[in-house]
Length: 208
Length: 205
Image 1 (cartoon, each protein chain N blue to C red):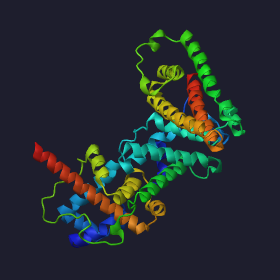
Image 2: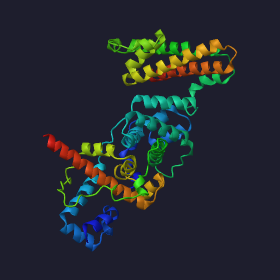
Image 3: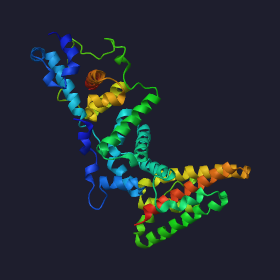
Image 4: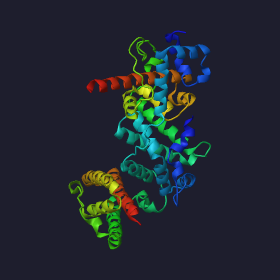
């Protein structure tokens, strides 16, 4: 499913009563209407903030990035012609703001293993080892903690694909890597998550 | 097919069953370890789609966005009161905006007092240390009554803008002929007037 297909996960469709619809708000925001800007912010703030929070695992940084994403959007709102869904447009902008910020901080958006791939760096299934099954028992809290613990490069691609619903071709374009690399990094991210969750489960079991 | 060969192919076939060959299917059926791996990775991927999306940014974020939009002129309309600052006037001629904004706030505050339940004004404990004037206290009390969630944000804004004004005033006094210092002071007053004006807007029924 593409991210555009996930548009209904935002609050954009929830505008009711005498409040502005998204389309009305976009047009009025182009005229400089304060209420329209606030409406657009209210409709999309949770999704943008959640993305930023998931990518940074830091509330202050996530708020700063949310602010920056909306400011960039509002500065360019006059150029929005409706060729794509507004939520897709906004979300792409938020992703770009986050990725740019990660790059500024020197955090690799694409893992180094992409170019210097070694067997040792790739999370692997331990053949012959006792293999605790996760299927059907992946707790969301555990998963969220494991995502927070992922290296930034893995995290970006996992969040964009599995959480936000972007396709590999879209991720490749945003992150600046090949489609094959996006697939490869996603797979490694999932393997790493599996490893982290299994470790957490084992620790939890040993503490009992 | 060996487990190693299967694992190498997994990145390409895990999300797209149509890419799986007969050998892949046979391996999954006969190797419990690889079957478990596929099930785990699918479970992680499926669970990720349902992660909580209800995290919400604090009120500070919108407040800052709104302020930036006004400063950049992207929000237009009746706030053109600030056009006065676009003219080359001396800073002391612009300082009247702050008390005017404060007066507006008091007027709307009084209007609210006449219509609102009296309980609203009880038990208000504000961090007065950093906010110096009665007008500021009045503003915070109004915000407390109308938008309690915004209180911390307004306290922050007032603290920052008061500090900004103090610095700008000192600089302007030390350098009375410095146009840049006066421009900065006008900007400081403008920001404070903006904070008041935003509060007045939010107080309107």
